[in-house]
Image 1 (cartoon, rainbow, N blue to C red):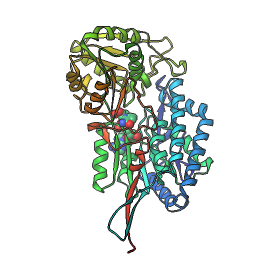
Image 2 (spheres, rainbow, N blue to C red):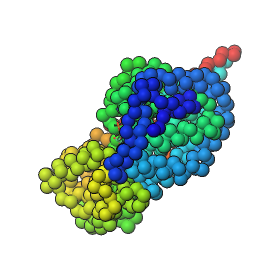
Image 3 (cartoon, protein in one colour):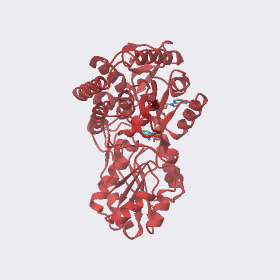
Length: 477
Ligand code: NAD
């Protein structure tokens, strides 16, 4: 049974209640976590506050950076252990689980270096005045994390928040949280003081809700679904608590007829099957110029037919989905597509070792998907790629922007002027030209337009969100 991590101690929930952890590869229970409640959240927030006002608050930026780099190294030293935990918990193929540990280490490395390089400005004002700004931490930050990349998203928000001088209370997903408890233990071993990093597990409507409502939380970073994002924003508004919302996507890959198709095809396939399609920035729509539509579709189809799905330990192209309800969700999208006559071009194969009780789903390539169809508009969060043709650049832009989301886009063209026009007119937080970075790039500011959320994480930009600003005006004559 796994415990919460509060005040540098592993502790049970106050109520003693627990939740089962289910192995996505078999559908069987393999562990338990704490089903925490508002009291546990309160314990964690008090610990974080005491740390912020005590040992964490008195550290210099250099000292904070040294702790962060120590944790980065510790994570790298425990890569095998952490990737094994995440693999079991979330059903990730080995390569993906290892990549997630590497990203976690990299986040702490990147933000370690930022601690003593992030600063305010001086502002020319009236004669006889000196005016400057301080970037100051919010205080205690709350972090609500989903199950698809627990370690990566923990690294993304918590490393930045700590670097900026905050202390953190983290509420991981009830479907994927075990690695984070271990990372918090490793942080304590590195010398992080009690209260700097707290992990409280349980349901969203219990622990997450209590965290957002807690008056001791000064900022919330939420990564998850657009629907829950609305709840978070409403709750936070009641007490004017600032929030960052990293929500879903329906990201387009746009292939023009002058594209390097050999380069594009494997990247487009990887961009949707990575993590079994359970990636906010998955390239789940491929828009192809009419004159090369059949050719690109056939190349994508060959690649899809070659994909293999099986147990995480076999390290194939695709592992299981996180839970049964996710498997049913993907099936329901495909049933709608089938009902509406949308053709299946190709699909991957399940290996014999993939148990019937596991939550597997083969990757599927669909053609001629109408732009307003549910499968072209909503986030499936599974390995399903929807292809549609476009006539010209204007039509490509129209289709690319025709969903409520705007997280990431990929553009494949050799025409330099078109590259800039597309980057300018496609509404998304990140635009990749002749490459695609689903989840990649610790240095690259990341976040959404429209229903994909607001605020930015990653890069130095994240530090703006994890701090607030004081303007100091000194009249000296
Ligand atoms: P989810 O919204 O169901 O849950 C996310 C987190 O919120 C979990 O920890 C959950 O317990 C918590 N939560 C649920 N209800 C809550 C409530 N009422 N109050 C407070 N907290 C609550 O999302 P999920 O299924 O875990 O993750 C998948 C979603 O996350 C997808 O939509 C995906 O696109 C999105 N996502 C976005 C990014 C990004 O950076 N933009 C990254 C990863 C995932």
